[in-house]
Figure (cartoon, rainbow, N blue to C red):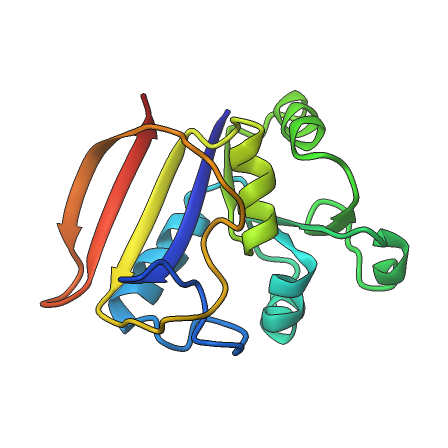
Length: 174
């Protein structure tokens, strides 16, 4: 299964500006890329905090693909929102989730964050590709792509300008 980490970050590696939620600094070109990349996947996984940030948008389109899965320590809190095959909540480990989804025929899984979810999937060696959009901003502080120490090595497979200042980088593990 392809497990694709999708993220937009500032030049200094922040997913968010300071303590703000969401990626309000994302360019229109990145938003277009992000939507197309997610649509190209069979399923997308995100953390509870990311879900809460985009909740209204997701609830407004629950029947559309891809299947959305929210990692949370308390999936029972979201039972009334769940729609099997469309919007699901789980406390499974990333390794088990990937194994279960592969067994259900899922071929491409988008990992949409946040930091803890990226850490879990990356730390378990599950990410088969990173698609990172670098926006021309520096925040000094904010939520980072990864929260803990790591030393994974990657090979650049594509570098493309999305606009005059925004760069899309695609990496695969070595």
